[in-house]
Image 1 (tube, rainbow, N blue to C red):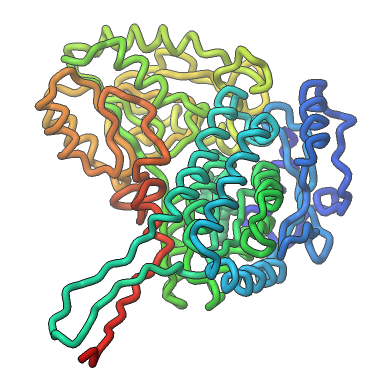
Image 2: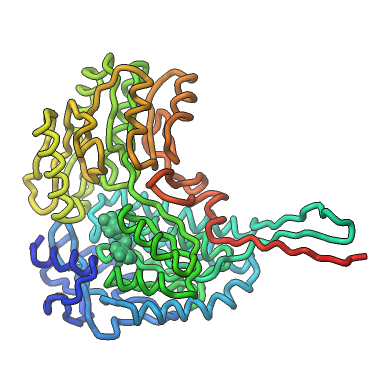
Length: 527
Ligand code: ADP
């Protein structure tokens, strides 16, 4: 990927005021000419389906940035420019908020059944068009097509689930303390929601916020990642087709801090929901204080994956491989530290390395690919920094450990042995295809190491002992625990972290509470 363009994309995401002229070209034409055959054909297919949207969505209208500036969306596997999308800022965001605010009154007044039907239709449309959003994800994010199709199903499942849940937002009647009174509790939508989402799940991180928000009557301004706006825009197009009213769902993208500040400063925005880095999450939480917004945050993890001596080795290898290498290690629930008990360390390491060797790195459009590129050059440099830090402190690279011969931001699936708690690989999220193996002696020591972090999102344990499964699951300071299983997220279960991994839960019957306020009504003098 051209470094200049990469730097520009990062600069825009970070809110640089001056965007290079080439990047600021206002052309709406998608440059297909220089694209590799596969990507070109894929883009044609998406365009033919009417799902190649390259403008923001405000009040039901597709719009450019008011000053005409654009940013490039690139394919991380090839560096090709896929499209230019508007580089929006505070003015467009203010209009999106105003549109969401005025639509809130009509959308929230519909019956739950009416909202449910529109959401269900949106779900049906996403599923019937599943290939186009999946292709978009592979093109702009890099994940293999199989994973992208999996994300379409997973992402759509939140719309389906909350279409159903819309009808189950019950209040309460409380036995009164005085006989001439009746005490009621109503659940009402919080209002306009600002939803800021990352690039690693371009669809699902949006649907699991927008699904419950729309279900209970909120309206939304979504800001997808500047790296992956095309999937978000295609999903928004399908929402309009499904009859979600203009203004209930708005999409703006571009200058992230400026958009974020506009959302934070608005008194009309009553809730911020965010998935992304801990650093930005903290800023948004602090920025919400001034207008006392409701906040949900899904931030970084540092997932331990504990393999005990009594584990079924095949189950442990399969589970930890899936938990580590999904999306090339770029998920916040990816196993970040594989803690292996001494008695099984050698055997596990041998079997695990063999499994990692079978992973095929390549362009996600190729069917055989199981590992796509990292999102960008900065991500590769971070991985390199972590590997250098570990080896300089005594860790040994057992497999991989360098950039892949394919170039770009491809990195070899890597296993590093003898990692210890003074290394970056132990302390921070590597967000790449690197599996650190950390030996331990006792269950107590493993739990201590697992909890020795400020993060608390996902944890995994592998053991055949039922008492140990309970004991360790209960001792882990994490929001999610997988026991003998490496892929655990589902729309029906609550997803979210403790400690500095975040606030609130997404998905499940609990997820909708994040978008609701309780109102207590006391009816007096009833005779
Ligand atoms: P990552 O490093 O995974 O990209 P970020 O937290 O930087 O995580 O990005 C997640 C989302 O937050 C993206 O949509 C990004 O544009 C947005 N973002 C980044 N900085 C800010 C900010 N200051 N205010 C609001 N949103 C931001």
